Length: 284
Image 1 (cartoon, one colour):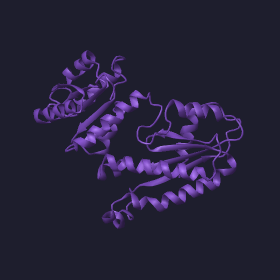
Image 2 (spheres, one colour):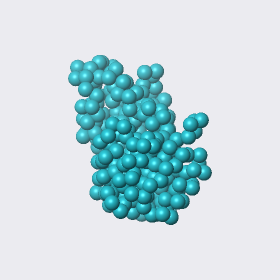
Image 3 (cartoon, helix red, strand yellow):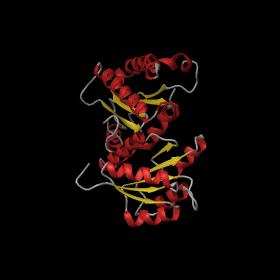
Image 4 (tube, rainbow, N blue to C red):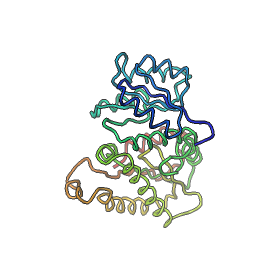
């Protein structure tokens, strides 16, 4: 924490939950502002200028989605991280939350320690200007785009894209802390494998929280890709508790890794977003 306390706005109509969250986050040395209605949440976001907002989706007037929409549409509150509290578990509800610009969500009943970690990570991401991922410490955002701009169109570099599939299913079942542990373990596995082929200009970063991108020499691409795919396939079951491993091996929504490659960047148009989309669409 810095000398200036981070400000959290909580919009929650259940008085017991609101009181518990207020007391808890104040004990964690945050300045906490709590309101019970959606319209009050919109007003408070402008008056308080919080560093983060925790929004319940079910509110007595406008819902949390509408609060988020209004916050995102006003330049004064557009960049405030939003975490949704919801009793809904349907994928469509989560997608709706992401569509209106939420940074995260947590379903009730929730573990307050898990919520604390999500709040901490969201604030850390903002304080670092989205330059490094708060879980793995690897570059993301502008640093990744800068590196890609450096190599696109030139000879001597290839790209390897790694996507960790079904992380949201894993997180729902085992929690936020366990999913962070998986991401750290995967990043370490990639780093250690890269070291076997390393050169100073090789690069590893995040395209998203569960997607990694590697910049490596074309001559190393096939061997590195094969080795990483093999190591990840062998490791996946160990991310699960022993009691669940046999059952998980039969499920189609278990954790898995999908990879995509671009073997040459020579004469490519200088468009970072198109390169990312191409990798995303060709993963297998």
